[in-house]
Amino acid sequence: MISLIGKKAPSFSAKAVVHGGEIVENFSLDQYVGKKYVVFFFYPKDFTFVCPTELHAFQEKLTEFEKRGVQLVACSTDTEQSHWGWLQLSKAQGGIKGITYPIVADTTKTIAMNYGVLDGEYSYNDDGNMTTTGQMIAYRGLFLIDKKGNVRHLLINDLPLGRNVDEALRMVDALQFNEENGEVCPANWVKGADGMKATHSGVAEYLGKK
Image 1 (cartoon, rainbow, N blue to C red):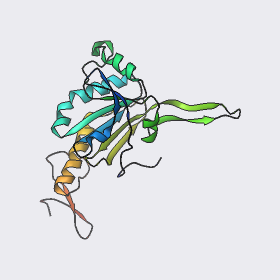
Image 2 (cartoon, rainbow, N blue to C red):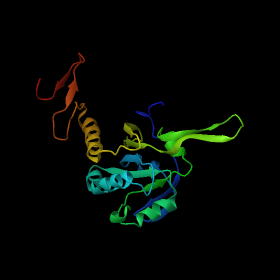
Image 3 (cartoon, rainbow, N blue to C red):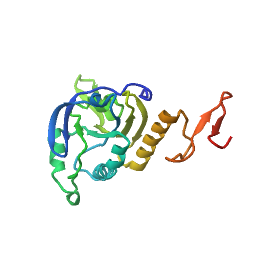
Image 4 (tube, rainbow, N blue to C red):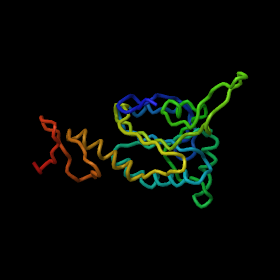
């Protein structure tokens, strides 16, 4: 797979459920270019076990993302009707009622394919019949997209492995720190810590600790 880092996020237009229950046509991330950062994340399936924990965890930190000018957008290969139905069930029932950020319906599986997170691919057997490998659902991919529409960070987990939402926030902070200060972020950097600058000799120095 060719990495999307530094490249334009693949464009798409698809149905999505927004505001916790409204189905819209032709949803696209292009609407945020020049206006907002985007954390675009894929999850495998509606009505499963790990997935609702992730969606609720992102919702719990929604205000923190919004403070940073970030739009959260989720996506799976389920239909918009499936998303809508899942949104009607409470958390206690295994549902995602209360989720307000958009959930895209990648029913053609082309969005997941273009972002490199589709578990499987189409092929033909010796009889000329179309077959698939894998489950043809999305891995747990996460993409941090800047205001220019470029992918600046990505993370892809296998199906059983849930993500850390605080780490997604940390990467937003790191990107914005770099953009605002022109400095880079060392390992385990957190908001409020010193950054680093690259000297002419190519040696990185901690700010204020030269």
